[in-house]
Figure 1: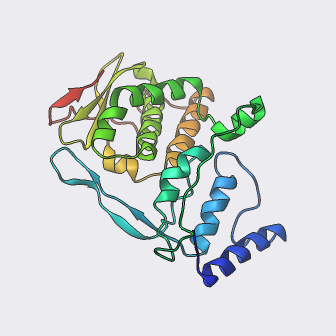
Figure 2: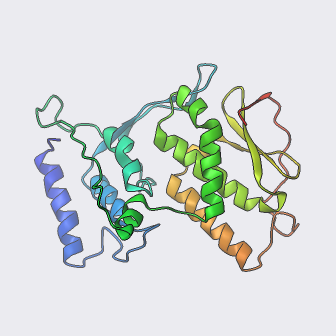
Length: 253
């Protein structure tokens, strides 16, 4: 991708500050979940003023579930936890010099002889085994449906992380037996071992990053491990019994 002289100068400024341990642009304390090389890269792109063009996510009735956006990379967006999942977002970066012959894409497969450590660093599994299982169940049951609605794999991963977070929040109701999607595509319900049916909004879930959902899931899991209040504890005021969805739901499980 061809960039402008100003963008080059600002990228250089961002990188050189880090080399000199000048942390005015980026916190110099590595954390794989919250302050990694992915965060650094997107921080540099935001600092340099790159723009991004995100298409709208439609619902089955033709309305926009999330609106189209074109402008500076969102301040809240720090990238996806798994490095490979950033591909869709990178492709949405607006070319600073349209029609430049340098605006090309080339992709290589990961090396086949990666060590276990390299696998862990590149694949970056997050969450507890139970949370990952919940996220995978969500994708197995609703991933294809959301793809039909025009959502990208990164958006589906964000919703799966939100589902894992909600299951952790409501773990006292048991495992999720099936995920349900309302006919307007705006609400996801979870049918667990014990009632009631719980739900969360698709636009609200997409309003946070995948990373934010996983961080919240980790915090909820740690809180439960430490013996903090749970879903059945009335002192846990954040957890409320959601009403049954008004719109009929489509069960894909």
